[in-house]
Image (tube, rainbow, N blue to C red; front, top):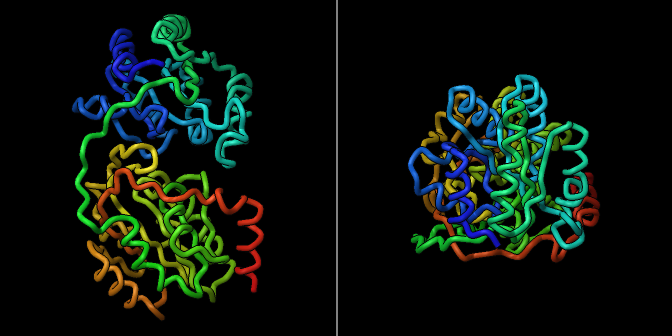
Length: 364
């Protein structure tokens, strides 16, 4: 296995000054080290933006690298094909391989991309190397990728799970009002509503606390829970639709908030649980600490915005929304919950079963 320190040392050896990306647990160790170096790591909103950030740094003379998970490769394809490949910008991308080599040993949302990642790179004509879990092989791969760089080509290093070591997170204080407490306060408000929850621990927490047929636990598709809920709210304008989102997921495709404001579905309530981190990938920081949710909601066109910091405030905000036409944004500042891992939705429900029972509940 490559140590996190050894991975970062290889980036230093080839002169990478800036690293950007969207967190993945496979890169949890290096990301923890990079976050400790001011200005070294840029937490991008999504994978495509990460590639563009790295490309911009390259154009301005700073060698860069991108860390992503293959589940988000689709976000990166447009700037890869129309920016990096078109303008011959030699960005280096490390992409972890979920759903590979055996999709059945991973979560179902990774199966399609797991078996397709390498074929997609072949179709795009992008050079890539499959990393072995040894620092000597990483050095060899990076030296080989130098040829692509000299030719002005982006290059990919594909990283299987377990290739890179972790780093201790250290102690993180939790003030008692975390994800579970927020969802417990939210549950009574969900009766009668169609509910969409974002990928990661939010879906898993609600599944463990209050599973019901009208809950749709979105797995994968990070950043698209709000668009999913918007579609349902437009299809069922008389129904109340609640989207329970995370800060990192909202920031990934923030433009959907403006679409919601423009179309103004009256039954839509958008709840954002903001713990300032990508909890399910190791607690890497998002950029939500500088987000003014009240101003964002107003600018996007929501009819109302509330920002809550405890369960009582959340219950009060939700009670105030009953019967009031939306869309509404409710942002909830919560603490991170290190070491708390809710059960996986897929342990009890398969994707087809989840879809079928939700469709029946939505159309009844």
